[in-house]
Image (cartoon, rainbow, N blue to C red; front, side, top):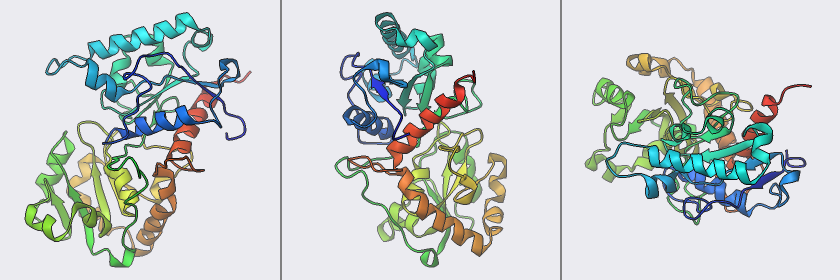
Length: 338
């Protein structure tokens, strides 16, 4: 990839809807990819005739901020913008029409991103969508064409690679930990089943103030063997990457969630996937994992951490390269064999 791949970044699109990355918060993955791609000199070419892929550099978060009418419950203004944006590009340049958008890609992390493509059939059906809301059950995200984008919560944009690391496995005294808001269908079931019922299962809604004063949220993750990562309103959660950063084995509870980078990563080697129906058996499932296997999984989390980290300047095998590789890999697999 590093020797061959070339990407053209469209200069079209007004700021801040396009070309204006948001580098902080839970949707920061799209912003960091945009920033690093627009600054890149290795993969980006000025001559579109030399490009293998074409990047649509809009921000789903900026669209949400500037186009969504509060309390309207309508994505129509955002969908209209994307339809018109793609139509203007396809009218101005020949590249979209050559493949009907199949060699074009978008990177968008807001929960609504997949749904906002609905007014342009080629954008919805052909373009490679790298999205955080990688839900295979809704008929929009297509595994093998689209890309599951890791959701990263960036608190310090000047140092996106800070606050990484955790205790060694021998010092992790908590079996399982979760604390978070009651978004979606899964979390209320998890908390209802386990909150206050088992000292080994530290499952909370919000982390109680008296407990937080003694041990912070981050320290809980650093001190737990397993970090529970249930879906929220949508299938993805920044907790998965947080768990990896804190070297805690992620336990993913989100039916139909397509995990990132499955073409190169074996998630069973460093995570546990639990079906939503098995939440009552959660402790039984975790205790059924032998100590040797747990130690191997925790070591693998630490080993694979580099693939889930942003850097101010991209490094080989980091999150920027992993996302770009997934996009390129899926595009190559969509090209018919002559």
